Length: 122
Image (cartoon, rainbow, N blue to C red; front, side):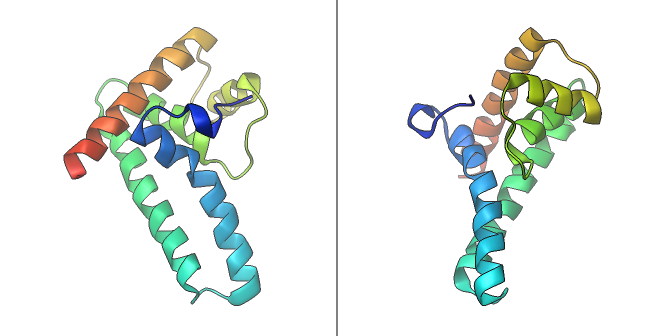
């Protein structure tokens, strides 16, 4: 299974871990109360901010696109992957095949880059 909330170590991981639940909350509140609800607006802002930060990964000249897809498939798809094989298959579909070991190495690198961006912004 993917990382549990109690084991999050960085601001980037916390931000990414909350992305999928924000999508679900937004959809739930929109269906009940419409799009003008304050909670819906907060969800939209959280999603926008996370998308902007993750898009910044693409600016890395050597690995930007690969790092983006690793984070996107791992944390930002509407349906949560069930295991690492689901994640690697999703990355292969969007970007191309990467080995399991490379995935973990590049995921750590992407998280570190997002943490650095969050420090810059703060």
